[in-house]
Image (cartoon, rainbow, N blue to C red; front, side, top):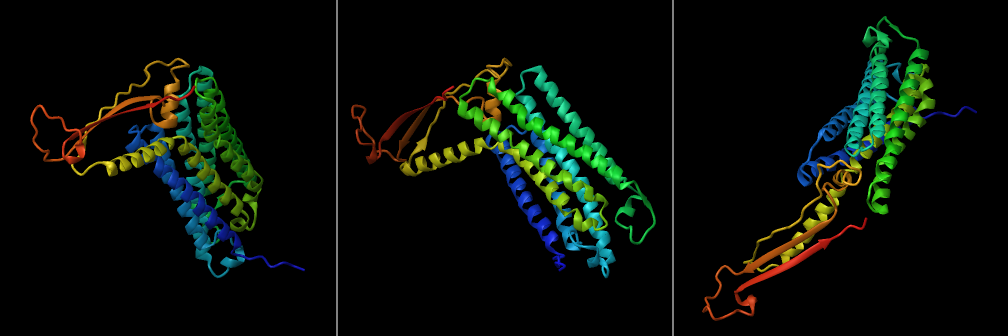
Length: 371
């Protein structure tokens, strides 16, 4: 007995996955921008590349949403009375793949720039430069064949109404395999190299594990690439828009996870910011109406000019926390009093500040991280 297939089921799957991973990546990048511009105040090249990757990922997602509306994920029978929708769906698929490739390459460049900041050994730097070169090279090759696979270019989406030629589907599949292998190797390098970068630095085991774990999320992105590989053969399917839905889904997963992994390492300062804001709010609530603070924080970081393995820890701290180090030694002095204190003689000393005199509070905050 023949089972009837729901023609729209693949379209819905593309829509849901695209929405989920777009939302995750948008939130991650939004928080990263807030941390780097408002909390840490150190917006760098890696942040610029990540914002660019997010913009490209947004364009990729829009192509997916529009493509689903026009018929991505549907069988050819759906287009028998909608030839214009077929052309629009194919155009959205083609544009989506273009944005997908550029998104993933730019996100990898951002992450590698971040890792280069904490690299000490020259061999590790060479590995990262090789990874960025590999990602760029296979990305450019795949992008070129994706754009120019047909002549004229628009024949790819107008194949039902115009005349033209396209390269062999087997050649395109081979190029797609090459790109996928290169992307997987790059993602694995990004995910595993932090173990070597971090493990010899002087910091406590819990911090090391956390940093390596978050940076290692790049391995999950490589898993998405690997899962995508078996579906590449569907490029030559007669039911192209229907059978390539898995390629669309895993492309969104790869792009979204890559961006998210690149942003998570920058978000720990946000926890400190929220914690300190909460503490400040409670402190303000405890003050008398006429009080005002005079604060002086005495805290000095480590010298960041040194690039030895021990002192390079400050760069890791900045990557992980947004500060030069986690050690803090501070003194805070607060003077509180009413706007119209009662006049007193020079021989009198007010022992009850709540009646309008001046109150001097001095608190010492000491936080030492265990190495």
